Length: 281
Image (tube, rainbow, N blue to C red; front, top):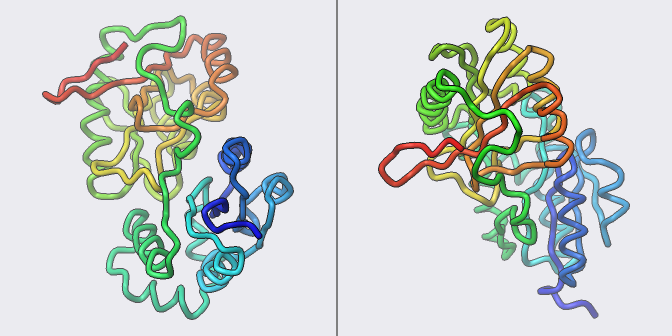
């Protein structure tokens, strides 16, 4: 009989994060139980799991019941959920609907904290998403051959202040700027769409800044960038991707940096110091 502490649950969205976690968790000797979301989670994630249950967004009662049946006492939230689906593709069960009606602010942190609270009330602890995968955190310093110019540094500092401000309001984590002008602010559409929208307005040479929200909860919704982020910057002839070091996830580092180098794009992990100043490369 498998003990409950050997089991770990994954509430999986889209992207590669869930599968990377499964590999790391199994290497650490854990049995992996996955809640997969229809239309979001990759089939390969389900295939890699020791046990899997497919649900639609909003089936909280089914999620908890499955975890309990599998003796899961610990879980993590991993991967992306298309946020616009909350308006068209949610099938809330009674437990989810009851919880939803108790949430005053229908924003990311409030929703996820409420779900985590409901699960912990059922004896299922929600752990940090970086468990087993600390090496995926965005490193500090310039990752590319190209280094930020004086103007780009000014844009990074300007964008940082504005990204922090929208994060404090739980709106988004990313802004697109050029010449110290905000061109786009991330909201429910996500980073990729924000880059394309802001880059179109910039015409060229835009700077993308992505930071954590103040008081970011490492259990869910960490900022993330990867190869696709650079491909979208290339589409709009952007010049810089600046990301908060140690507070964000970086996927496909080698191929991402290689693609950025080919396009002459600066990729830099920025550190905010105790006095509020930034270390930019």
